Image (cartoon, rainbow, N blue to C red; front, side, top):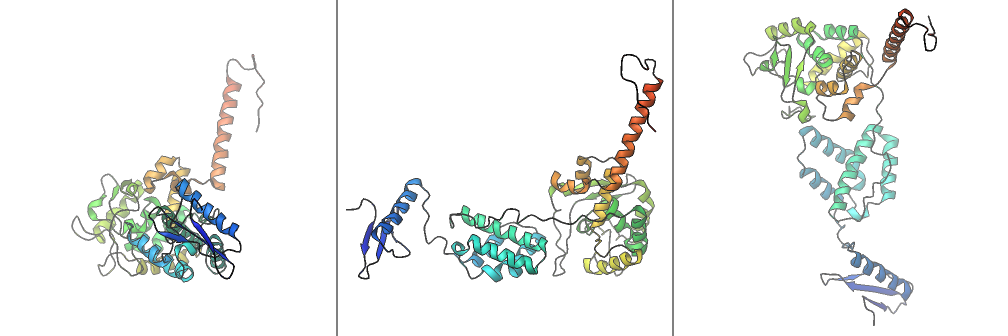
Length: 382
């Protein structure tokens, strides 16, 4: 008699195996076997899993992926924009393939095939975002012990490699500010030299701007969803709540904007449209595109790239990584380092500084009282 489980032979000659789990529920092999030895090997594996404490209910993964994924999003306290993004990625890029499967039917080969198909018809950034979301959902399923292991195992599949963003010159920023019109001129400057996200500017109030100290306080953000709704709430991260010190050359523009365009009262919105409505991404977008064309900027130069421009100029002027993080409202060094790249112009500045330092050292050595004593001869270059 077997110590664990039981095997028996059908009239067809094939073998089956079964055992009782710790709850006393009889578990049968999902398929039959050619030989008794194969049935006993299957039982031995089940017994070993129970002994090691890694046994998993074979029916646990029989949960529909779509049901689980939608619930996964529902249970998280996401910002309105992130919630909208996740549901859009599910609807457009993940569920069309995986909605028909249970969790335990989503295998590494199926994930690889899905990703390959998406990469053929969808942008690399969207595919990376979709893969990260699928991996996060399946990781939770593994934590919930509904599947044994996450099937998303493609190295680097969730990494986005965005192209280097173009940096505008000071003259181009001025030209864009002129072209977009007086009502929105300050918004361009705050985007570049603030540097503030458009959703942060959309929720700025009169009380947040201080002409005497040339500071603006960022308290909240109001991103616009694809439905057109303004989702007023917290900034992107806690670090987004900050005081931004503006360069003094913006004093005239800030004063004029407060006098001419800002709503009255401390709670008045800093930026409103011609008819007094709050800032809208869609209507401003048309003005931005016309201004960009008038200045001759590349078609892919986004308003958001003004932020990149401002920070790059700040690092050229000597801003440290911490300075960049504070001004950007970034909560991580990784995010702030986006603005710390060293472009060709910066390399020229570094080389120029090194040149000046070496020349100064050579001059000091040449003019010093101990010239030529007890040391190597100073080599004088051009």
